[in-house]
Image (cartoon, rainbow, N blue to C red; front, side):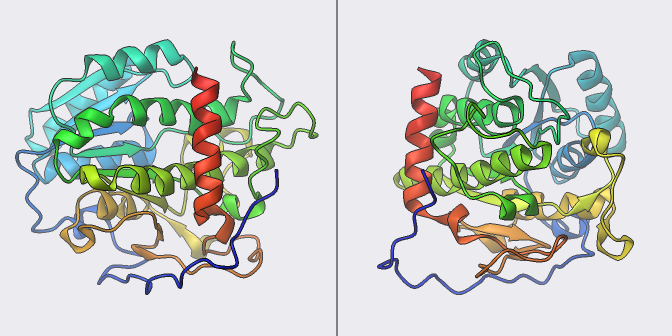
Length: 317
């Protein structure tokens, strides 16, 4: 099914800007922000942008849970965050996004409200087509479907927060890949490592769009972010980061947009948008240059978001 864009779509709201930008760090974004009394969950928090996101939120006073596959690595990360921030309310929960039983168990065990859900974990460019035991293409399963199951499973906890925010990490790779809802698992298409990654990252934007729409009455806001080009374990299958040097970010800069969307008072009440470099991205009219920014209209399309949500619900059933 090709992407759908309605000719009668309303005029989009004005793009949001903030005092922060490309070079801003997570600590700069949260300077003066007091998150005491709030709870955050960050997936994939044992390295890279996930660790820095968790650290910055903890430094601002939030109680932070690291949702990780490797519990021992998670405990080491939590101890390091506590040592660097003085925040002792940093905990670890086992969460394997490939294993939907693990995701369900994690969500069922969550107790109390959840103010910030940062769906950060991800994999990129697996060189060969790999499937989960249920037959899902692996990048789609980890980057989108596992997070979809987690997000929907935590709905009640998010609603109890009365103003929760969901942050869905995407990538500029989404601009290469309009949604192909009739072939989510690459049963018909020729597998392409970056193409499958882009598919999964288009899906993560659509997750934020539909969650924000469906759950607006519960006070839940959801947005997607592109963290930028940061040298992390994410590039283990690509031979390292290939983005031009002038467009690369440090880990602190890479986490800035995530924590801005998760916690900054500047974005209270904002939902269903895509952010990069600490501001709302431009909606594009065509595919950008290879390392360019912006967001594709098909990734923000309400019809695409609804259909993907319904398809994901069927897959989980």
